[in-house]
Amino acid sequence: MKVAAIPSGVPVPAGQHLVVDLFSQFDDNGHGAVGGVIPHIVRGERLRPSARAWDFAAISMAVVAADEGCPRVGSADGWTRQIELTVCVADSNFWTGQAAYIARMLAFLTGDIWTLSFVGGGLQPAPDKNAVLRPENVVCLLSGGLDSLIGAINLVSAGWKPLFVSQVAKGDKAHQRAFACAISPGSLHLQMNHNARMPHTSERSQRARSMGFFGFAVLAATSLQSYDAGQRVQLLIPENGYISVNVPLTPLRRGSLSTRTTHPHFLSMLQELFNVAGLRIDIANPYQLKTKGEMLKECLDQVKLKQLATLSTSCGRFARSGFRQCGRCVPCLVRRAAFEEWGGGDGTKYRFDDLGKPGPRYRDFDDVRSMAVAVRVLKSTGLKGWVGGALNSVALTDRANLSAVAERGLREIERFLSAQGAL
Image (tube, rainbow, N blue to C red):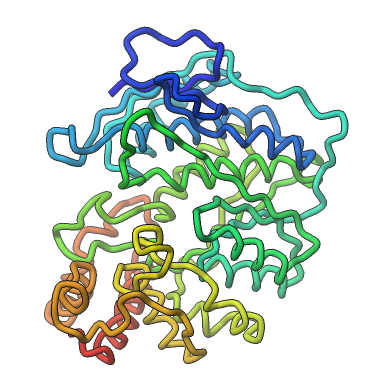
């Protein structure tokens, strides 16, 4: 599919299958729309992002829109799409030089074949005369999940003042606010949403969803006093190593069928793009070599963690489960195993609680069965037999430790499933 992400009023290149109005609200004009609220939030918070940050945000929003606007069902293998994306930016000459690199980065993230091109005329809001450079000294993603909750608690406990950035998801907004207020009430908390809307049914796999998060974070990071003074800013992405590496549980989940939103290879490619673009932002995941259970046990403020942990959301099917955590998807299984490992008590009310029950809704649900298969493969063939070639990339310089955290994470799940009677 040929997709063009262009602000309203900019001429549309010929031959497009889908036009997305960039930084615009959906108005049922036959186009899609994405990022309409972002300029308003930035202006309302009196922020002053850099020009390059606005361009990166435009690219991020365009990628999210293309990901949602191109159905996988029409592809030759039912998954891999060929997406030709045109994005309107301010500095089209610079980004054209990065087009092939960004295409490779996105191919790893979503499993698709991307071609990118850039045209001029992109959004560059006039600097707000009343803009205030932010005093926070680090940017931290706060999703409403358990890992980002722990990361935020640890940052403040270590003496940092974070600017929190959240990508709003229905059902999580109030909890994100509650976490930010409880952990660092004096910090700015940016809650944004890409608000991607398509003139047709959206693709639900959403493998590029993390690009929206990164777009918001770059706008925030370049609005800090320290960034304006020429310093580098840390962008923290708290994610346990088991989920980050996301070793495919079975051969049917190879490639991007297992999500790669915080995979170390993808983050290293994104960091290189930041460097080339002159964005003085350093991506860090302090928990790359920790399991979720280890993160819980090693949290620096156990009292606050016990107060807030159960309110966090981990479920990958939250909306589809009636905004109740299902208890049986991969993220829920990792969460439940971590709570058991921690011993701090899990008061979460899961929709499917007792996984020892027989039948396709419980013990034989696909994710539960796949976890059980992975456990059995690990037992019978050892770590190398289960991991296979998932961590063989030469870009991964710490393969032994990444393999080790994957194994420890699966062992946590093994103990939980065994206790549930689901093995």
